[in-house]
Length: 474
Ligand SMILES: Nc1ncnc2c1ncn2[C@@H]1O[C@H](COP(=O)(O)OP(=O)(O)O[C@H]2O[C@H](CO)[C@@H](O)[C@H](O)[C@H]2O)[C@@H](O)[C@H]1O
Image (cartoon, rainbow, N blue to C red; front, side, top):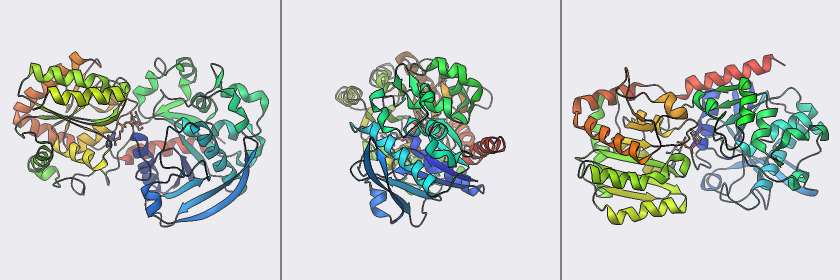
């Protein structure tokens, strides 16, 4: 079975968040299971691309917004990632460094999707499945189904995975001219609230759509930034599949980015060494429990609550816990967290920026990982923290609800709270401090967490079942 994954991100080529992790891992596990899965990204002028060799496997010219546009498809020569990696290269449009936020982002992603379809259409290779991730490739199901240009691909099925339903990639009808010739009677399938909405269109036109956890499938029906009605109508066509983690990249036993490797056999010693290294770097004492946050500093992650919650927790539990934040995002939140340093000089540290290595060190060296998310389609941080024996402290929402059981419940291992509020966070910090004081209980929980299996093997199989079902329905 041949599958192409289309996405804006893929670790380690281009990653901003969890989307990159998933697209960098799922295809690898699908190939391990006997499929032929490849990833197609826009071309970015980034470190990985500069440091690896590529062949140009296809070159053509198409019409884009009435203009003849040259594009190339590059393939990474050595397949170093465990899957074939293709880049769509369009001079002047898809040859830049950043992944997002250019003023012509809409044109960039439309051009990427068109070039991909033209490539597989003209080179006469119809895959079994095109698996689109988030709105950046959300127009493909529509174009495939409603443009006569792609009739040759009639037997190809499309799967659309929603990693974040808050962002739709919507744009005005004035840009309709960038799309290829389509059946004009079907253009209603592009529209939502008088604009072209790639996410809504993908949900309506794909063969099946998925969310990255079952709970998030339900949440979209009442919280999806204006698409609630659509998700209520289409609910029966959706499947929730919890993300896995790449256990090769995220493995405390072999992870080259952390201070000391450890496994189930020497958890206490391994955690201690990593905590010492991390605390040394940030000038924190190792006696207190270390509660950390890693992530994009946006309201969906509850990042706007952090500064006040940490400030209050330190006031309420003086000298009882240390806090460390790693993140980048909204300027106001960055500033609030930065300014807090001046007020809380002993028990709080922050690193504003993106640092992959530091994130590994924090998963390994912290005692608790805080995730006060308002919205969390799946969440990977809690899965990484479990793998590294760090207790996740999560708000009960989306995938966090599906993957973390409170330590007060049978078989539990994490700390859960109901509201994304300063009060609930501070209360959970109190629970973390009490738990930390009970060394035997902590040791038992660490054992339990590190024995859990959230690898991609299981979730990759669920995607394969879905593909098989779609293919046999042809
Ligand atoms: N400043 C920083 N420095 C270093 N590393 C950083 C970092 N900020 C974030 N990261 C890393 O980025 C990833 C974040 O992944 P998440 O799944 O938690 O969130 P995200 O919202 O990006 O993903 C969306 O897609 C994923 C994948 O489906 C869903 O799990 C999730 O719920 C959804 O919101 C982790 O690997 C984390 O370590």
